[in-house]
Length: 210
Image (cartoon, rainbow, N blue to C red; front, side, top):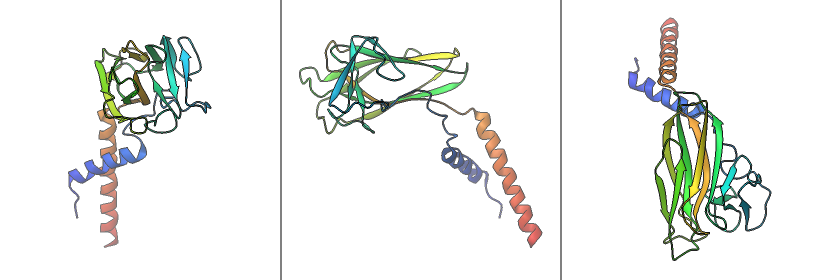
């Protein structure tokens, strides 16, 4: 039986996903803020602190959250506004012309009921403003949502940063930040060709045994 081309395309995509080829490794260090031994409710890191592994903290401060509210996953998350608006940034190596996908989980500090709408600027390729409302959410039900966007690298080193725009101590909550390279179309074509060759070999073996 001759298998249709659609089968090989579907098989290629499935193999890419199962082998991890659908996206490269996460280029961000400590994207889930799990590189910590802090056991309290939350702790505040001021601008210039090196306590948040992998990240540069700017402006006022940020809060590393442990048990204070439920993270998106793992044990920790981040309030981008500590005592006041803060920023975090991280640089990573990129290949010029390569496409990358940025992903992060977003919620909001639910404590400030007078100003529930939270604002954050994500800096990379002039990304737009992100907002999240804490209305209807609590410490145990934060309402985490995943945000994604892509960019093409124009330099061999790119910097991703998140900036709170709250003018308060209750800001956007962040978790699970990642940057991954997207496979080039040639990668899929090569895999499809390989699967086609495997199919041809299998057919010849069946014919030889008949």
